[in-house]
Amino acid sequence: MNIDIGIEAGKREEIAAGLSKVLADTYTLYLKTHNYHWNVTGPMFQTLHLMFETQYNELALAVDLVAERIRALGFPAPGTYADFSRLSAIPEEPGVPKAEEMVAKLVAGHETVARTARQVFKLAESVSDQPTCDLLTQRMQTHEKTAWMLRSLLEK
Image (tube, rainbow, N blue to C red; front, side, top):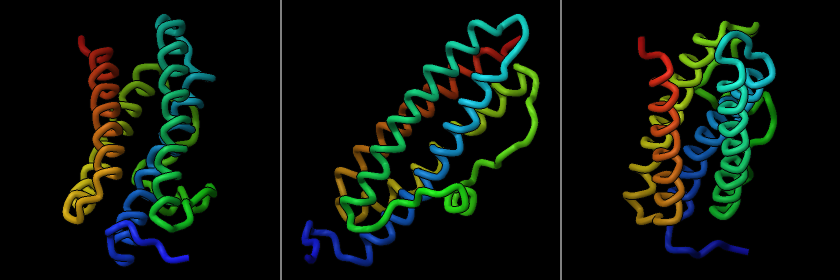
């Protein structure tokens, strides 16, 4: 059945492709945050362990929202590690860094997702795709706030 939501198919496809990058960035950041939650050590262990748990739980919910928007636009959501690796601007990093480096890498990850979302927002806004704009506004707000909170831990 054809989709007739007031956005032409080519633009829906472009938006879905952009959202697929947001999804890949978000999932990669989720996995990195969960890894850090499991493996953090040091004097800030308790604080970071709990903070990372809160963050990966939020990210786990976010991936579902982004994937569902891609589906609502009429396209399949990427869902494999190979897809995410190809689409994500957040690098996978082997090993277990020290706690402070974990925080810095998560700041960079959240900033990356915010930048990716901002690029897709421009396209969605240009075709009056308010549901996507709303989703991306919420994602940018969350990622920018989380980056700020993590960044504050690095202040000397």
